[in-house]
Image (cartoon, rainbow, N blue to C red):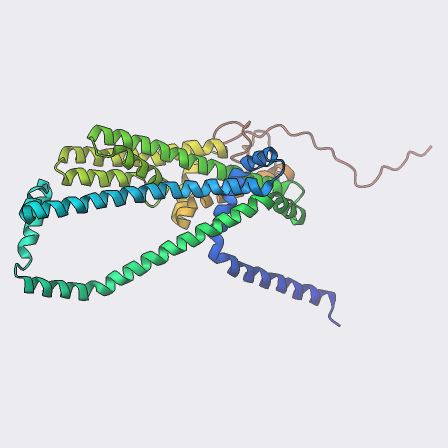
Length: 394
């Protein structure tokens, strides 16, 4: 018969094996689950209010919120697609009508000056005889066909992966909204930490997630407004459309709103407006590009109750280490570390505390602003003797 120590070791090994297998199962959907948890924490207050108004119909309240998230994702994408399709159709119709009425030379005459020269030199290199032209086209199609097929396959695979992750995120969001309270209560009950410590850490995660999301959306709005001002000054056609694209591109850290302004600058240059293009290039780099690095940390630190330098380096470090999702992971990791330090300082005390020692950065809203936050007064500790005092002898 196995001893108690052997059984404990085997059971510990089984637990570690199950954790490893669980990590392998969760890993393909880790980003979807993480974003679902962040959104669930952000919208939980709204979900609770809707549930009360709907007389406890939690499933209906969660469905309304998930539907709102779906609309927030699909409406901009649908509007952008419709605009692009319309513009492409109008462009193809314009080219076709111009070639039919005035020929290729008439189409070349309508091309702006900066582009007309390269187009004319390119047309001069194309064989004029039809047989040579057909042969050249066949060679180009044969040589580039494999590359084009691989590019199309990669694009379709990436689009399918994004769609799959989004669907999984929405499903997880629904269940986290409806069963999130029970999940938190279960985690609190099985956690080896003291009562209340796990809930405090989870509450810190929620506050940081809300602060980062709100600051990201607000910063995107400020960037799109700054871009719109530049578009109006430079008289860019469809300024509102480009500003809307800049808003949604600002939510993607790897792209940013400045890219949209630079694309508009390129379009203005090729359409024969070099000074407007130069102004937009400077405006997009200096004004629109720097807004993200200034406004976002200032807005995020209000919800995170941390110094702006900590928030700034947490955002950049998370983005460099984890990619786009690092904009949330970076501040969450820093907040987790600081929350543990605060809990240790409050519940266990410092090894050799001295009056005036600075407290751990961060904390509740009523603490002092700044990188160093002074500790609040603690109640005096009461020393209880280990053994009862013996009664006095008479």
